[in-house]
Length: 250
Image (cartoon, rainbow, N blue to C red; front, side, top):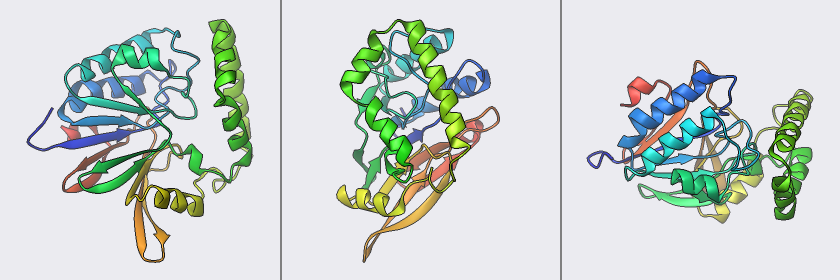
């Protein structure tokens, strides 16, 4: 941990999977070389492309668990808010990695700035079909039933849901899949936040909104990760910046 220049890292939407090993390599490098220098790392959802239960095992999952555990045992805090793809990450995964699971909305003080953290999907209320689906799959009794199914069945169901989600997205406008400005402002005002940091939309950017007649807020959107790109938000006492090259973040 770098006590001389304290900073925090925020990432989201890596969608780790076996078909894009370079993204996993980027993430493991980040955890190994960059994250240990931070005060804390916040993962704001969709770390994995999908998650069917903490009993799922693979070489990718084992590598991620091991590197996260190494990070958290080195006194770097790591926090996780579930996304729309990995909302079934639970206590077993948290115990094995040392991460701290956070609720859908989580306020923090970031160098004197009241900051609200979330994945971002809850802000996209114009996507009525998705919100209806989200309410169903977040019901605890449905989750318990799903987790009782054999692992192979869960994987098969998840793959069908992903295929349907991809098909649905092709029929939706970009506006519907983005956050609703009015609802976002209301949410920020509810938590009396000055900053909002979220992912989900895959549109790295900084926006400025109005939560009341005389009060503005800053909305920082994390980008997704790909084979040739990363998106890491670094926040220090001097402000924030996006890191798109791991060598530059050392």
